[in-house]
Length: 380
Image (cartoon, rainbow, N blue to C red):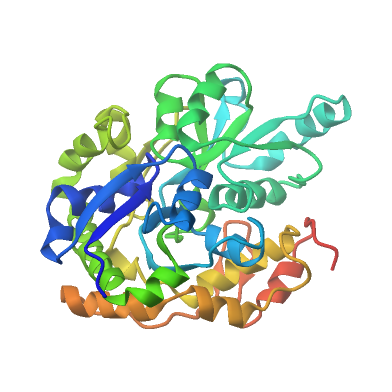
């Protein structure tokens, strides 16, 4: 049976753009779907609305289905699948204004102050958006590369993305890791600046996904395929530079992000005024919604995420890397959607990936990579 009425949960972030465009430009209707978007206050709320059946799909952090499969949300949590990557790039780590001019892209410059405050019982406090989520991993990897143990040397707290700037304004944070436009807004208001972008940590990294419960995907494959086909066309529209001003205006609407278009547009296109005098302008910094096979749920992404969850003791022992990857990464839906929308699927890519700290991840051996870092939480 094909479901034609879908409610999709989303968070107010620039990378919800394909969902908004597919709705506003009638692309979901083009594939026979009647879709409504449901703005959620947090990633936990979006996941819970999906699992309860209140929503049939959700804009989620890449790591959420893995955390679900590993039991982070309890034994009754509905298994989720990843048939589609919604976006790449577009995240950052923001530091509070007092660090401006003292710390740029390297966390090691922070180490002395972090250790002193830790020892004095006044730890430096960073916020991420969900403990097993994307932003938490970017923050952990960045701190660890500077010799800072994120589980022992700083305080890590969870705050929904739209609330980051308010907490920074109130002096409750030393920094945060989140998606745009909230880093841009902190810089625009003079409350903080972008220390490093996620693209500098991992160029063209996978970011948000459109997730379905495993049960819904099995029962309604034609619905899932149709929704993804609409998102393929929406992503192409979003990636056209001629559309970026209109896209920023659309996203700025209170129903979606509720942030001025002027704070959305520059980083959407890859121009980053970081807020401390530095500027980054590059196509590789633009949010990518469809280019370079952006939507393909590649197995190597799952293997990297699992290796990091292993590194940071978010698993009990070594996870079953092949089995979890095969279960969660549903490229069959991706391939079917591109066929329906007239696109061409890209090949499976198992090439090693080099990161900002010089480490190289080989998808053929994720457990070795998990164990390769001097700073970790797991007991190997």
